[in-house]
Amino acid sequence: MEYDVIIVGAGPAGLSAAIRLKQLAQAAKQTIRVCILEKGAQIGAHSLSGAVFEPSSLKALLPDTWQKAPLDTPVTHDAFYYLNQKRAFRLPTPSSMKNHGNYIISLGELCKFLAQVAENLECEIYPGFAATDILYDTHGNVIGVKTGDLGIDKKGEKTPNYQPGMHLYAKQTLFAEGCRGSLSQHLMSRFELRTNIQPQTYGLGIKEIWKIPSKQHNPGHVIHTVGWPLDHATYGGSFIYHLSDQRVAFGFVVGLDYQNPWLSPFEEMQRFKTHPFISSILTGGERIGYGARALNEGGWQSIPKLSFPGGLLIGDAAGFLNVPKIKGSHTAMESGMVAAEACFESLKQSTADMPIEIKAYQHKINTSWLAKELYAVRNVRPGFHYGLWFGLANAAFETMITRGKSPWTMTYREDYTTLVPASQAAKINYPKPDGKLTFDRLSSVYLSNTFHEENQPCHLHLRDPSLAISVNYNEYASPETRYCPAAVYEVIEENSEPRLQINAQNCIHCKTCDIKDPKQNIVWSAPEGGGGPNYQAM
Image (cartoon, rainbow, N blue to C red; front, side, top):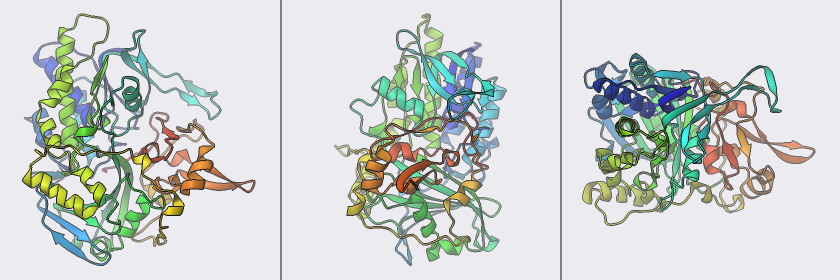
């Protein structure tokens, strides 16, 4: 199957790129063939965000019809709190976190809307097809992707329903896989896209949707907190967004550069809900949704080189999240549109059969409002390496005094290098779930509608299986059993010896294990297309 452009991932970046490509082709009265692959069973199935949405990029993409998008609830009120164990202290809301003119939305619903726009423009969209391999020509240029084979059992043998993967070829392939995309990681390594670039740093965001009593519901209210239950050395915080229909989007983010291997982001979130300020909102309500995903937090200095022969990185695959704003959908959409413009110009001018590198994309990004926005806040997230209070003071200094014009750029280190041995860390005893406010991981995964075919090969690989016990278990007390928000990893006894068991069927594709494993021994790869969570209005 041959196309002009293949887009891997039907998130806001990929869909915006597809729409803009078709808009440009229509305006020029040209034909351009665009194919979008999405590993989720349906569009939006794997889309997860807070989400307070800034509509600037949507307005630029669809100036006449943007208001038809599912922009659920206009923001009416912002509040920012510091929490200790029993009290909440109101702080001034940082300017970057003020949301006048923004909307509380479901990112999955927005993606469904954008997908319909793309289909109306005659883009081909294939949900349930995971791109698992990159196709190269004899010169090493990217010429497309291969989708995964179906009907391969755990032994690697073909089953009666075997279907070989498709080879899809294109003049340009845009990778919009989202945070820590497996193919994007491979491209960064092969083409050395991270040379002289700061390491990416990540957070793990865990989200629940609650339906609460009407007396506790304030549509349009947006609340953020820092502080308890995290210690001041651990980056993180919460969000509470009041949607329509008595729903609240409730989330907790923990920076994956944390040091204590006993820490469990999932358990920290459950403990957080017992705070009087939080429980007063949720008590009497019902939890109706659950999900988790990793977030790129490195910002400007962690964005890799964006182009290579035959393709581009767009959206969260590159890391365009604005951490102080706690927003990335508008920047992802903008990167997709900029990529589409550079790509269309290249396709229009190129006469060569060999794929070319579209270097104009990097220049267009570097001279856009997107670059200015991210550059101005580049020192906010790394300031929290020195603790909560320094981080807050540094954030105020960078955003209100220097306004991003500090003559320095702060640095990061790899998240997997930060854990200390378990023997040197304080053990954390988490309370048992009560089934009303707090819950266990398996009942949470159930709400994510996660499904994988039981007999398919495991999509979570250990480079060296022996390290799971010799290093992770013996030195760090198996941190993967705590940082995974889906109970994928557990240590069991077998013949009186510990063994790591991987319950891949629970995986909600958050990628945390691929990021945080102390020896980078766990490798996440795409399972059979259609597998994973099936989020509804998350």
